[in-house]
Image 1 (cartoon, rainbow, N blue to C red):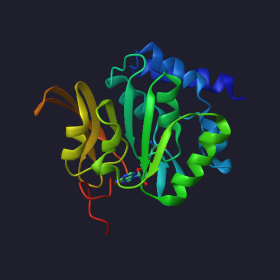
Image 2 (cartoon, rainbow, N blue to C red):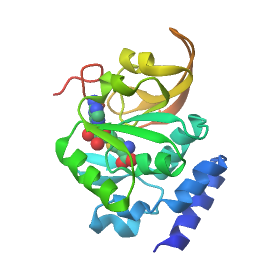
Image 3 (spheres, protein in one colour):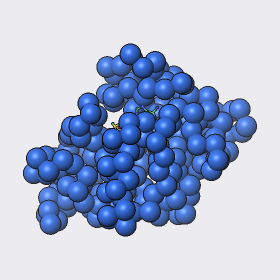
Length: 212
Ligand code: SAM
């Protein structure tokens, strides 16, 4: 279903500058319409963010592709995602062969997406909790992707990143953020590149925004 729409989306993302063939292949294979509410299915292959309920969104496909591309993933790496949401980003990472750990703070979203992963046979490790403090038990991660906007880069996530690994996180105020691409060069040494201009829902937690 929706094969032609998916291929058109791949073409659009490629025209917009996504060049990683593994990312484009994943976008062409993962069925985004399964990750959006029923009423939104006919919009699933438009390059737009869509509401998924509880005031949250499934990110725009370009944003998913761009964030995945900048992680520069090698085969069989371990990736931590903060903000499972609909599960689409995690499914893209899983499709690319990553060992995925994903944390969602809202219980209703966490349980609906866990059920979806089980139905679709997507073997992603999930947990309901505050992702700003990471998931220490399985650290270090070769890649960390934060899909909500933060006032800063949570120190726990920097700590749980492997040397040589990359962390991608939107940093800014609640309306707009720059995407920070952080590469850990040594323990406690980081190179940061910032790309304007993105807009994510807030990252709420101990090392993010206060809940208010
Ligand atoms: N990656 C998602 C996808 O593919 O649909 C997009 C997620 S949405 C833009 C951001 C998600 O981050 C929301 O579901 C929100 O509840 C979650 N979130 C916000 N703060 C969080 C935190 N501290 N830990 C875990 N999840 C968080």
